[in-house]
Length: 274
Image 1: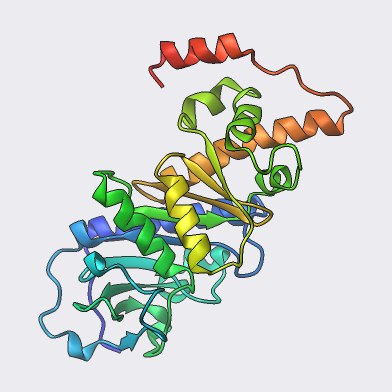
Image 2: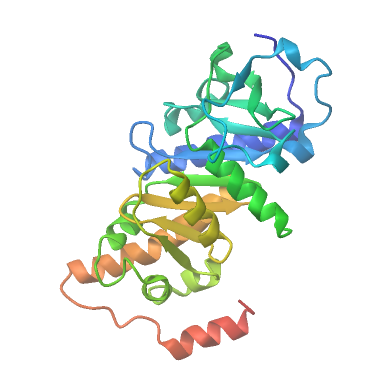
């Protein structure tokens, strides 16, 4: 496979993906090949090779309802490979690849990584990642990274019948456990009702929630967040999970937590202009 040399800015972004991947693994949020990370490198990639025919070109298995957004044509991403493990992102050239979505948005050229294989494929959730990033860019967001992982306590709370179907209540429970959760997850947490992993319905629901919330919970499955890079996306999920962990820990200890009062949460909001 033809190889290219990545510039320093691109290497920095991929290094952040590798670092975040180790955090996910250490927290037991990324069992086997669970979870995915992708980052849009288009603005920092530099000059694209003039002859893309020398790079492996893969078409989507089915082009139609579940396809790349047309405006993503020409965008360049680093993305974890299908079946690859988050913990192996410390060798990103093996566990992921840099690819360019083709000019028709019907497929992609693999430009770097991918174990040097001509048939290397990104995660099956990559199309939904692209949809999320394109939607964010349409509203002027600087977010370029999408992270999906399986944070234990956020998933546990999404099984709780009193909180699993109420964005406001779920968010409130996490916010009230620690001032930092209110401060660093200021837009709160939205819940996507359980549906088939990898489905268009799940992709649409996630995109919709992330237009309004910092973290989207896939009920009984996991969480998704975006950020300007992988570390910022990780921070949103990490801080949100701390709120859920504290809340569930109190319940496990036999008491319902008093929590930070609504008046104090409002004071935080006003003081820090959240």
